[in-house]
Image (cartoon, rainbow, N blue to C red):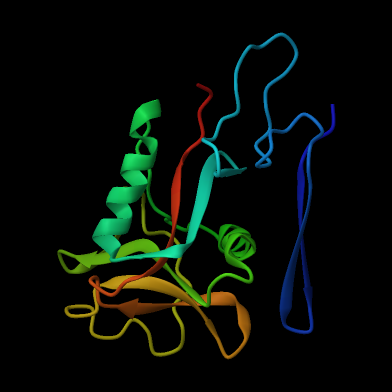
Length: 179
């Protein structure tokens, strides 16, 4: 059985992402379990699988942070999972998301907001990674949501604070499961 691979290559300040798709993967690149299992793909249609999670970029829909998070929850409730605005926990995940939005948007909402005097994730996971741009976060009491932005052509998408009612594109994420 072939496996799906994701390759990262940095060259002259640009990050390139290459992937190979398993011949046993479904149409959106989610690997299926074979060898006697009657399982279906771990992700809903239009979601892509990576590292135990399913992701979907909404690059033509513009929502506020709370509305986008609700949309992510509504997407996944039918399979008994709860999706949220994407939380990012590593540089590799940040780079993977860059591949999802490439050529579609210069910014997107992420599921990190300021509440109770600290930065927290919409999905309840630990806030254990950040990619704040220089001088960020700014005024978290008023600009208490976060978006990732391509700044000065930097494809690593740095984080900036934004008003939670500002509408922009977004990415949903939920734990993969076989259903």
